[in-house]
Length: 151
Image 1 (cartoon, rainbow, N blue to C red):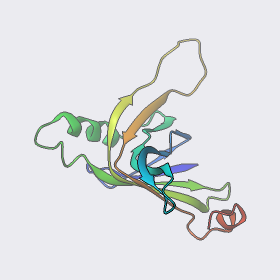
Image 2: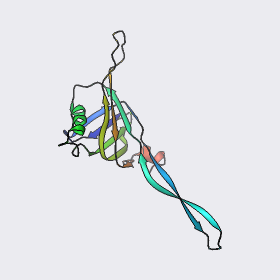
Image 3: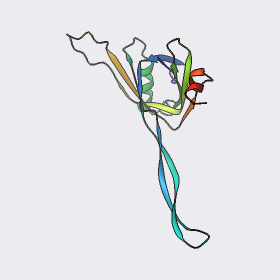
């Protein structure tokens, strides 16, 4: 189970069954230099990070706060307010917090409703994609986090 908390429309808490895209990639800058003995070499150093968009999926809900948040992005008056810090918490089967990802200045770049098929028994799903300006991870002091070597 994944819990999402954040959003400027209300202190929104929503539960999602699937998440993808958590990650960061650093560019590589090459710095040409010379060693103390006069031998030229190229030193590779980390450049600016690129944060992956994060996609969350859940069964369709009657709560419209995520849709209202998405609407804020395109409104000139509320666009800057749409950027907010978000926490995504992963829970164990016993509903104990295991990991938390904190996103800085996140906002929804995409939201989509369900695809309907009259003969399907599948749960109608909605999808939210967030872009952000930074990510941190916290194992929340869990035994699972320690066992996985994440502390």
